[in-house]
Length: 96
Image 1: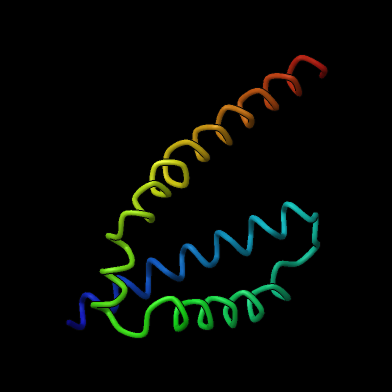
Image 2: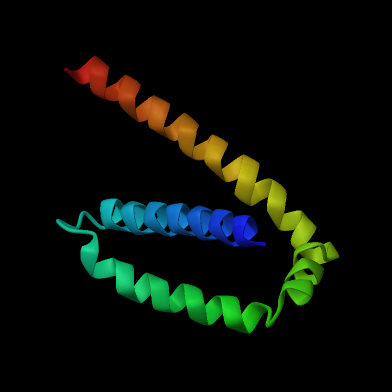
């Protein structure tokens, strides 16, 4: 149980840090440290409102409506962003 909690904490911390850095980069903020607390509060609030316990969380995650969100969020959008990034780097190299 301890190992499960530590790995989940580590995974959530990495995702939260990535989201904060992404938003800071998106809005061209000088420091991302001001975003950590608001994002943490939002994360805690949403995690408690979506599911109050682990079994409810699993039921929500395996529901029929959620299955259709996994492919776009975990495959399509990251691939789209990767292609855009490659194109941007190619255009930057051409102009310089």
